[in-house]
Image (cartoon, rainbow, N blue to C red; front, side, top):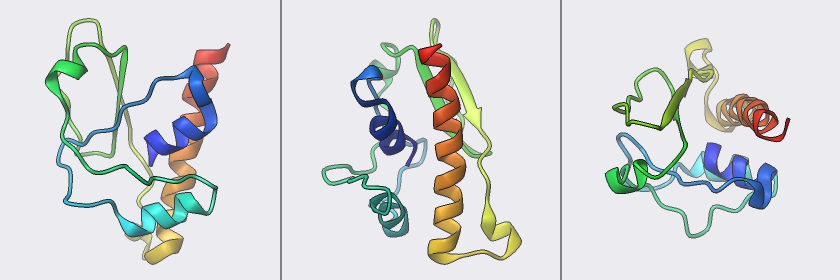
Length: 117
């Protein structure tokens, strides 16, 4: 979600890669639907693990959630966004995913403002 949102909001300003610390077998369908509602198409995307060679070439890594951990790499800034988890409040389905999406979008917009100011 974060990569799709950053690509959508930043355009060519930021080069974005997406990978997971424990990627699933396929994209979460509700995530895809919630991003489609904003005009973001994830066609061609798929879950993939972190590429250690690529990791050494980036400036910034953003992890999402409490459990995601990436070992530090010299010269690479790593930040974590402890994102909202509406299911802890009994909110599920597409409404949950919209809240998660909007929380991640807020983080993305804040990070993008760091790049542009």
